[in-house]
Length: 280
Image 1 (tube, rainbow, N blue to C red):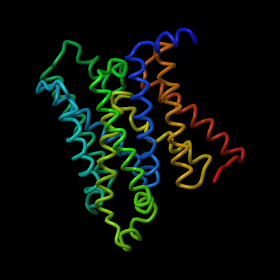
Image 2 (image 1 turned 90 degrees about the vertical axis):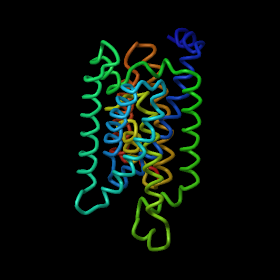
Image 3 (image 1 turned 30 degrees about the vertical axis):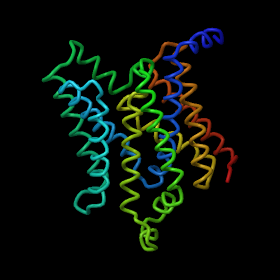
Image 4 (image 1 turned 90 degrees about the horizontal axis):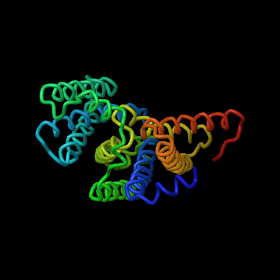
């Protein structure tokens, strides 16, 4: 098996998949901690449905680079979700359900009315549950993923203290002069970028697992925000790396394999937490 893995690593497309997969997992875990603590975990699922609808529109209009349309639409919807979630008439969970289900329905309808291939079911299934697209990335797609991932990490590090304040006590942060609305919009934008990137890795319906599981696993063991964030990032990268390698060796779907790896890691962390081994 080791020889087989070394042989696979000699191919550029495998190395591209590992690099992009690790970066996406890292970015997803960083924002996952904030989403879980703000009780807004489901936004990842909602935005992935929006991205699915945007990808369907991009396919219908014949765009070769679908991210050109998918990314801005997802960012706009992320901001709308945040804005409507703060509206007393439309609660956050209702806004997510409304936008996500609507986008999913519109996307699937467009793919059937204006089919771009003879295998619509296959296209839909691969988009929703992930496919081997992560193993067919071009050099330009890898560079774009690296650039966006680096931007996400830099923004998270630069605004770490403000994100911390908004996450735990937004009212107090606003009272001391922090521009909470601007920070929330920044969080929404970063989440949208992560969702669009992660769809190539795990598919539309499995994106939430990549965002949420590492954070929940870290919370089983650690208590502080910094410790949870660091452990979540490390665990997410390890699970993504291990999941991609397993999928290549066992010829299984990449997205599902990574998510199952995250589930196993969550079980192990929960067991460690139950027996009383906890960090700071």
